Image (cartoon, rainbow, N blue to C red):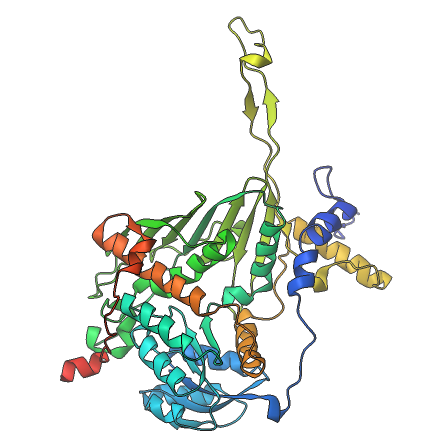
Amino acid sequence: MQDKTPKAATPTSSDLNRRDAVKLAGAGLAAAAVAKFGQAPAIVYGAQEQTKFGIIGVGGRGSYLLKHLNKVENGKCVMICDLQDEAIKKGLDTYKLNTPATAKDYREVLSNKDVDAVIIAVPLYKHFEVTKAALEAGKHTFCEKSLVFTPAEVHALRALVKQYPKQVMQVGLQRRYSKFYQTAKSMIEQGILGDVTHIHAQWHRNPGWVIKPGGKENPANWRLFKDYSGGLTAELASHQIDVADWMFGASPEYVVGVGGLDYRKDGRDIFDNIQLIYKYPKGQKLVYSSITTNSHLPYLNASRPEFGECIMGTKGALHLTIGDGESTMPTGMWFREPVRTEAAPVAPGGKAAPAAAGASYAIGGGQKGLPILMDKDKVKGNESFFERETKFAKLWLLQKGVMVSEEDVNPVNTELESFFENCHTGAHPKADLEIGLNDSIAVMLSNMAMEQERRVRFDEIDKMGVGEKPVSVPPPTASKKG
């Protein structure tokens, strides 16, 4: 009788052996980065060390943050604020650690002496207004991206923050707090990818935002109208433009792009698909796409949908995604650049021509992705026999693409915990004011490039909105009544 017991898979000659896999995927790749950015032992905060915060805006994003704040021990929510009763109820139901006070006017939160810090998750067109008031009220401030909406707000917020140097100003760009993305940056700095020349990034959805009844007059639809929103560029691309700025170590020189309102004929006036190309000072390019008709992601063996980045250098490439923070976590894979073989050209008559006459190169074989390992997955030498063999087995499975290494702590949790810690220590945030402003500038100029159908230089922002006073935009319902 044939034995149908599954056999252990045997690596072929093209596979990495255990020693090489550990060297390449462990010590050779992520050891330095994990040592620098690895997870510190969990800190248990006493009540006296908690940062007391209020959250302003508890719609979709605000409620999402509250869900993660349940797992952040060094912060305590003392107030929840939103214009909508339904949103306040949802916020109270979401936050489980205590029962915060509530308010509909954000000024009540800012006047509360028990509030040390505020988290701002209101619609984009209100970011500057609330952030300005929070800083002036003496509160540490965390504002979701995109930080500001107009050029005048760029200059005004930069000047304002200088007046409050002891207050933390942090922006919600959570990829800066991901160990996978930090490892990617470390790999670039170590030269493992060679010269990084291009980044491709996408955020594809199907269908994306669906308009709710009431059209422009319904506050829930604010993302779909230019009076209140930066559209796909602000809400999605901003995250990945920041990744490119970080990995390239610079801001773009100019942007070109094409956008269209071609498929979602429901009354919205923002583009439903955008294609952007950014040119950086060293000739590097970011190629970006956001569409609303298909969610396929061609990275990471198509195991994840919607969003991710491919960072390409002369010696290798990285596939990265932040994950949705719920069912999937950040992960990444490394692909070595294939080795090309030199072949002499063939002369007439079938004889090989002298090498001096020129040479061609055959494309090397495709490379399998190697895992970017977290510290918990690395073989350190102090494991028991079983632990060591388990790690070797997992490493081999990772290399075969059977498993994907994932981050162990959601970067949203990490960025919020870091914010509260900085409120006590005065440490500088990874996602600071200038990073947030550069990201917002990219959003504004990208939309301008698509709408005006021209190349827009980033130094144009230096003259845009200078001397103008930021204008407070009324909410959609207020505009209807007024």
